[in-house]
Each structure stands twice: as structure tokens, then as C-alpha cells.
Image 1 (cartoon, chains in turn red, brown):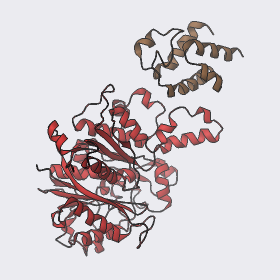
Image 2 (cartoon, chains in turn blue, orange):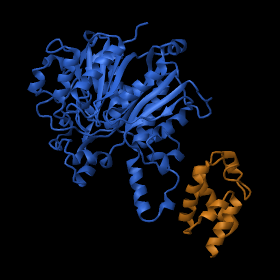
Image 3 (tube, helix red, strand yellow):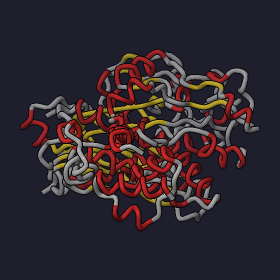
Image 4 (cartoon, chains in turn purple, yellow):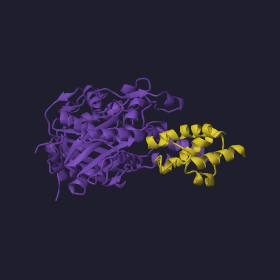
Amino acid sequence: MKNRVVITGLGVVAPNGVGVPQFTDALKSGTSGITFHQELADLNFSCQIGGIPNVSDELKSKYFTDLQLRGFNSSGILYGCIAGIDAWKDAGFDTNPESELDYDTGLIFGTGTSGVEKFREAIYKLDDGNVRRLGSTVVLQTMASGVSAYLSGMLGLGNQVTTNSSACTTGTEAVLMGYDRIKYGKAKRMLVGSCSDHGPYVWGGFDAMRVMTYKHNDNPENGSRPMSTSASGFVPGSGAGALVLESLESALARGATIYAEVLGGEVNSGGQRQGGTLTAPNPEVVKRCIKNALKNSEIDSNEIDVINGHLTATSKDTLEIENWTKALEREHSDFPYINSTKSLIGHCLAAAGAIECVASVIQLKEQFIAPNGNCEDLHPDIENLIDSSCIPTEKIDMKFDVIAKASFGFGDVNACVIFKRFKE
Amino acid sequence: MKKDELIAKLKTIIAPYIQDEEAFKDLSEDTDFVKDLKINSANLVDIILDIEDEFDIRLENEDMEQMLDVKSAMAIVNSKLEA
């Protein structure tokens, strides 16, 4: 038996909006969440701008107990738990610590690395010969599955609970892993998503690789420039996105609000062959990923109305557009609308896929296409492939049915998911 | 250190970790950290570190193993303070 899978809850903690209403407004108005960070300047970063969600102590205390916040220093887990709990409540469930164990709901919440600042604290104590002074909180906050451990306990989930990790593909992959589990009847609901820490200890390695822009420290909001001629590297971000996936049968039985249907998708790897490397994608396999996503979703490429791209604002943006045109066999004015959420929030790394899946579903549900920021100087090679009208710089209100979301990651890994407006 | 003074100090240290308010209100020398106060056993190491900081003492692994209730905690702290 193969179940249809729908989305019944959303949660998001993004640099330009915490919570779905604020994030939706920011998407519609094209509000940037990128700011200057003195800490990065003090540490001699080339790129001194980044995207950090605005989470107050007051907000934290609504999601965590005082005891949980004691010695807590893992921003990724913080963002992941807020997004996850929001999605859970949005789907119509409560969060009662005494709730009965829910065997029908599982959790796949990804991350790249967890609690790097907590790990740093621990290393200082440890190197000082003080391992006995670490306390009880280091393991839980620095293990990759920390976010899943915290969340599953808060919600009392009894199906599969795990963490996936596939660099910048992580969140989109989590959606497809949860989708598979429901489709094949192993769970009724899966809370899926991903999160990423903020700060110099996560971002430093990228700065050293010179893949982040150093040209916009004085004008942060203009720094993230996917598809532009002046794109000069990505702007680092952080946060979390979460989605409640549910079998259509379960959603209808509960009378739940249905945001969209997950038609299907594909996850694959270029194996660092045919031009693929640890850091660059194998174009043949990117195309294969998109084509198979369509095939698995049983739709034709002409049915794609909108694409939410990976589009990070590096020199690879043109290659990505070229891959889309070839995979869909659509170009110039025949190409779908395309946007990059990263122009507003930067590249949220392991959290990017989940935040951008949430952005895609919001656009589908509310029937608008979010504007692309900072691409007034569209790259000429991109303009040779697709018509500039396909890349809106103002919000477009439009009836549409299908949005494709793709994410690509270091290690030459790819994921593409297809969301459709729900019709019974 | 006087008994009442020591219990008061321990109570402040333990407060953030307790999961049973009623048992905490009635805290006495016989109160067990895990059984009565429902403290997560993982947090016992955090309580040990907080006690070390408060009294400027060092507790060894053997001390920790014995510190399961208020009475044993008081005895061990006093023995360290007297040492």
C-alpha cells in the first residue's frame, strides 16, 4: 500500500522571521535578515555579515524549562526545537509533558554539526585537565542527534527518531526520508526538518575557503546576491525549518489543515565523477535527480510552475540554472518562475533545505511568488538561458499548483522534492 | 557548618534540578535526591559541581557515589570543610 503524504504543520526560525507569520511577511516584502556582526570583524573574518534569527530570552523560556536552559549553549538545537514545536502545534497537537507515547509519529531532524560553541567550552576545560568539570550537558548538546533527542522528548514521539546529515542537502533530504516512511505505511506522521548553529565556529571554515562574500561588510542587506553578475560568494546564515508530514488518511480523519501534498522527489549523489568534486556538483547527476523527482512524482516537466532553487550566490548559480533548463527541457520564456530564498536569509547551511522547503510550501499555500533580492544585475549567462521575467524581483500573486525545491550539498549530494497544492 | 545553615545552602543549590515541588518544600535530612525530588540522575553530576563551587571543595568519584540524599551530602561537605 502506498499512502499519499500531505503537509499539516509548519514551523520556522529564520534570520528574517521567527514563526510562520513573521517569515511569510518577510518573504512577501522581500525583507532581508542579513546584518553586520562585530564578532566576525573582531576575529578577522573576510565576511563579517551573516543571518542570525532574533530569539529573545523571553521566547526561549516559552519552549524550554529553566533546567533545560541551564548550561545550554547550542543555537542549532534551540532553533530546531522552536521550529519543531511550532510545526507540531500548527498541525493541531499539544505539547503536554505527560502525554501518552505516540507510536505513530516519528522524527527526522537533520543538522551538519551540533553545539559547536558548547563543544568549544568543553575543549577549553578538557585541555586544562578539567574533564571532571564538564557537567552533564556536553554530550546531549554536541551529539549530532541532540536536536532529535530534545524534540522527541518534548513531544513524546515513539516511532523512528533520528538525525540525517548531508551538508546543505540535509533539510530537503529529511523531508523525503519522512515522506518515504509514511508512504510505505511505517508511520502516520513524521516531524521533519533541519537546523544549523550560527556563529564563527561554524562559519569559519567557509570563510577560509573564500566561498563567502567579503565585498558587502558595509551593506549587509545587499550581500546575498544569487544569480547576479556581482555575486561574489554566499552569506552565512542559521536557523531551522520544520514540517509535519502526515498520511492523507490521517490528516482527513483529524480534519487537519492541509498546506500542500508532497508528490515525491529524489535523492542521489554524483559520486565526485564527471566534473563533480567534494565541493562541486556532477551536473549529469543533478539533472538526473530533477528528472527522477518528476518521474517519481508522476508529473510532466511542463507542470512545474515555480522553482525554489539552491542558488547560493556563487559562480555555480549559472550551472544550476543550466541544469534546470536541461532537466526540464524548458528554457527562455518557457522556463518556470524561479527564486532563491537565500537572497533574503543567506545560506543557512544544514538548515537551508528545511527553511526553504517551508518557504516553498508557504508560497504554494498563499499563492504568491516571493521576490528575489539583489539580482537587478542579472548574470548575462543566466539571461542567455532563461528570460529575466522568470526571475521576479517583485512579489507576484498568482494561482499555481506545483513548486519544485532542490538542494545540493558538499560531498556532491542532491535532493529535489515536488510540492503540489492539495486537491482531494 | 551548622545544620540549618548547611541545609539552606544545599536547598538553594538543588532547587534548579528538582522535579517534585511538594517533596522539595518538605525537604529534610532524609530526602533522597532521585527517589523523592525526582532529580534526573544525569543532573547529579551538575549538583556535585555546584556544591564544589559553593563550598570551594573538591569531591572525588567515591564521594559522588555516596551522595544520594541530603544527609549524605551534608556529611561529605562537612568532612571536606573540616579537612
